[in-house]
Length: 197
Ligand SMILES: CC(C)(COP(=O)(O)OP(=O)(O)OC[C@H]1O[C@@H](n2cnc3c(N)ncnc32)[C@H](O)[C@@H]1OP(=O)(O)O)[C@@H](O)C(=O)NCCC(=O)NCCS
Image (tube, rainbow, N blue to C red; front, side, top):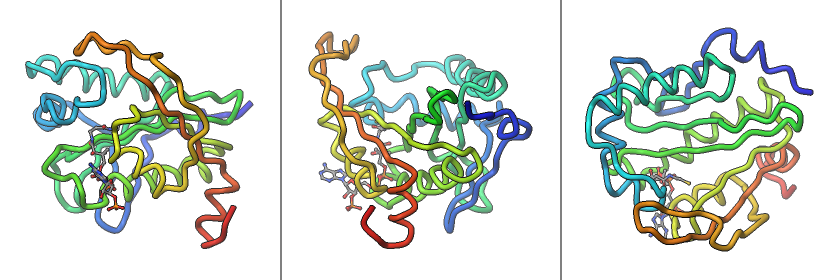
């Protein structure tokens, strides 16, 4: 079994060329509200956009509790040298028995289309496969979420499953499909060396 306790000793700060990934704090609640109150962001998430700052404050507490309970690592995406949170990237559904975690990400819409989710997720995957010791990372998305699927493909993820109508969306009151992707450590390493896995 993978021992993740060292990973949770202090919150892991990560840096990319353009971004700093850090812990989400109570001071970020207004930024989190801005992101999670957006109907665009929620288009494929099957949840209602937030409607109050109190919800955002509770979400920030939940992010911290997730880390404190060793259940996941929710990072704020910030531009280097700037405080505002423009998005989040997370490892959740940690499964130490199987050296596996699930990746998630979202960005405020004004930041879409600049390669930001891909750059942030690259740093998180590098951390996952090296420092954390993961063997594989999973990601799930709605088939209609073309941007998310493209991010996963750019990161080297491979589609492994397609679940039909496994997801009830309380917003549309419809059942939707889910595409399941994964990335194995060997493929990630080969991709970094510019080789085929
Ligand atoms: C998914 C999301 C994080 C992508 O972030 P991003 O920083 O814009 O992603 P990137 O710029 O790294 O890559 C997006 C890719 O999708 C492509 N894309 C986006 N919309 C597209 C569309 N409608 N049709 C075809 N391609 C599309 C972009 O062209 C880009 O590909 P490219 O680099 O080959 O040109 C962002 O759209 C978002 O926050 N969505 C709402 C939350 C969400 O759905 N999260 C994922 C849950 S599974």
